[in-house]
Image (cartoon, rainbow, N blue to C red; front, side, top):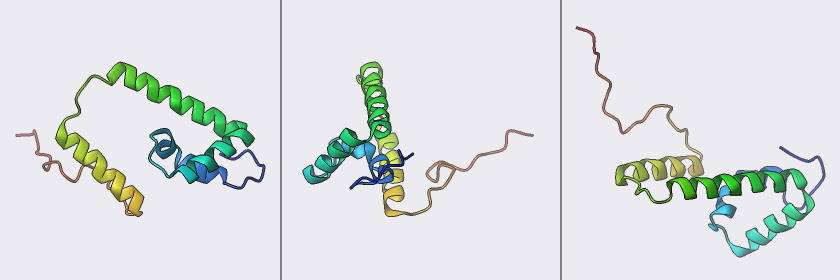
Length: 103
């Protein structure tokens, strides 16, 4: 998505790192760049607002449940693969091989 207007911080960069911004997982200098971008770019601001609302809804509806340790480890492993630019397998590499139910 891009609004077609030139910005100091490109729309694709903002959208690629939107959850890092939402989760306060980026340096203050980057947060400032994103805030400036949102002031200039209504499509990105709209996407930010939507993702922020979804995050609040999920927290409200599911925020009390404990995440199983193995699920958290799997998710974090996938995130690290994506961040490092590695290919993410389509199937769960930690799951046991499927067995045939046919006899």
